[in-house]
Amino acid sequence: MKELNDIQKGAVKNLIFRMADDELILGHRNSEWTALGPILEEDIAFSSMAQDKLGQAHAMYQILHKLGEADPDTIAFSRDEKDFKCCHLVEYPIGEYDFSLMRHFLFDSAEALRFEMLMSSSFEDLANVAKKFKGEIKYHIMHADTWLVQLGNANEISKARMQSSLNECFPLALGIFEPSDFEDILINESIFPGEKRLQEEWLKFISPVINSAGLVLPDINSIEPAYGGRKGYHTEYLKPLLDEMTEVYDIDPGAEW
Picture 1 (cartoon, one colour):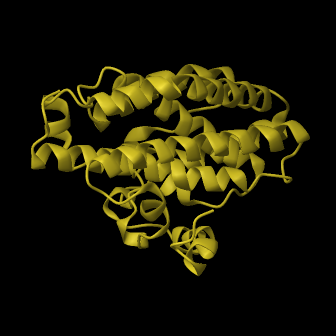
Picture 2 (cartoon, one colour):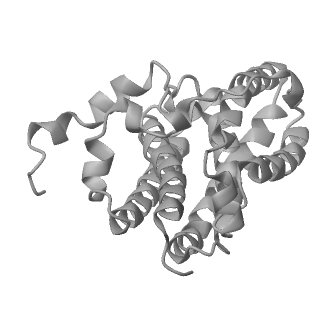
């Protein structure tokens, strides 16, 4: 792709901030399952996925650094709450296992499709990152699908809990696809096909798994999406998490580890 002009660069930065902030915050949330999972294998699984997400966030922050933003550590640990562009879904505490599993399934399904679309992006750095992490996200999806189907079909109590978590998470998950002010630029420049297209593909992607789990997908036409996060309006849960995340960094931001 030719060198980006200022408007195109702003569009790319906005897209990457959304993706990277999602990965950073959900990575920290998933890490909270360490030593708390229902079985040992799930401690390990969520810890591993958390590490993957932090690595993905770091790679995208590096792209932002190349585009003139601060270095990855400064971006991750020195911004105010209002400067984050993560969706509401990733901000919520881990809750019970059924909530975290459903969030994992809905979010990573969207990420898998997003990265697949970005593999053909005209912005080479994004395409390279998408290709690099495709394998990691594939295994995240396999993990989510397996447990969702297993718990959805286990017994009536398990099914009811998974359906309740789906009902709770679905409006939050729709916030992943909050439109940006740069949609037309991203689409016209073949950088990214847009959030509307991603949401359409996501609904087709998750529906067979939801059906296999014996669950019912909520009616999207009767639900208000949880928008706001992409524009800096966040839940009550983000600020305390950022304070916790940055506690050590704030002691000496210039320290080298």
